[in-house]
Every structure is written in structure tokens, then in C-alpha cells.
Image (cartoon, rainbow, N blue to C red; front, top):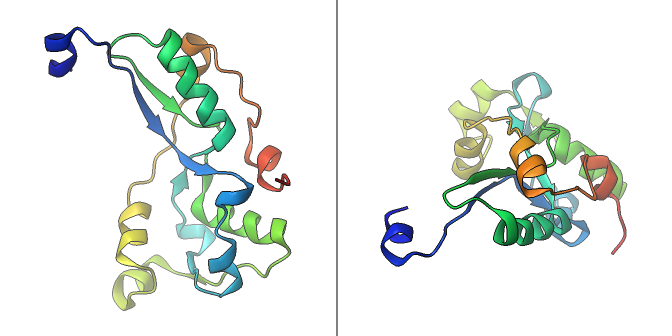
Length: 151
């Protein structure tokens, strides 16, 4: 925010959930069997936003965002990472990826270090400010609405 004050250029920040679209799905990794997920009982929360909705949010933030404002760009319906991968696999007609318990993942390297770092940061984002202050109307307000859409 110091840069904004020094230059007089307004700054609006977006905290963006995981971006998905038909051309951004982990299809190759699922087909190759290179994905393992945490078992549902250990799975952390994750937030998503369709790429088209994110583009609309960016435009709205540039046009109507409050200087210094912080907006959560997500569909407002958190799911777990495991649920996301299961739904993608189902959408693509692929088997669901195998799951591993958190204890096993930590002890035996059942998940990549990057994935373990990510899953330890479980959050549920509230997108109310994005909708109310920026006036964003999501085309894909829930994962199901945009996940299996054809390009």
C-alpha cells in the first residue's frame, strides 16, 4: 500500500481460489495415475473459481474496486481437494485417484511436499464482498456448474 500512496495509483487486491476451466483440469495426471489425494476424512477445505468468473472479477475490481480493498475471488462454495479431484475424475469418466491418510502422507511421502504444504493451509473463503461491493454475478456459482462444461 506504500507504493499506492507514493504514486497515487490505486491498488485493489484479489485473493484467488483455485482456478478451473475445461482446459485447466488435471486430466493428464489423472489418466497417468500420478495423483494421490488425502482420504476424505483428512481432506482440507479448498476454494475454487472458474476462469471466466475470475476474468469478470478482475474487470469488476479494476472498474469498481475500493483503493486498498481486498476481495476473495471464489465461487463461495468451498469443497475439499479430494472432492475436487474425485469430481474431475467422474466428469472425465476416469477412476478416482487413490487416497492416503494424512499420517501416511507425512511419514512416507505419500504426497508431494508442495501438495502437503498446500493442504496444511485449509481455508474457506467468503466471497460476499466480491459479490456485493464489486457487483460480480458468477456464471458458475458452484463447481458442478462449470466443471464438465465443454470447450
